[in-house]
Length: 96
Image (cartoon, rainbow, N blue to C red; front, side):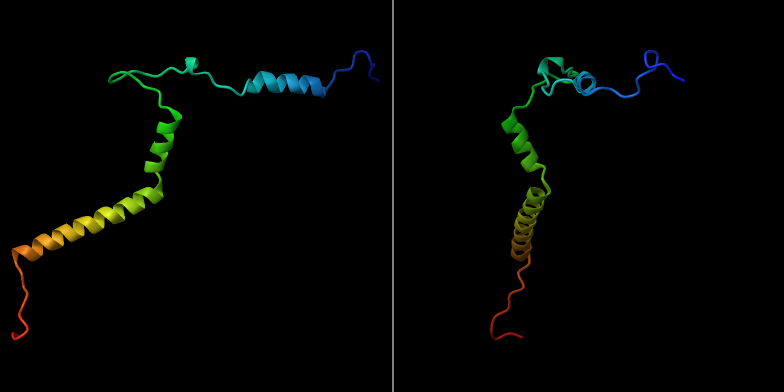
């Protein structure tokens, strides 16, 4: 028979679990002073929130799809106009 005074505890109390969670997870804030950024080519600039938002908009699939449609239409129109001016094949209304 096990003695109550010598028995080992198996479960943690709520307070011990809270302390363990705080120890393992830590605080929810991240400080920029702890970030180590390697400097390979020139000075390193940490981006602002606005710069990150603009960059994510430019990298989105919707923006890239719309931009490729606009650029494709523009290049097609430019090449079509150039090729039509080099060798025009317009016939008059009396010719076959």
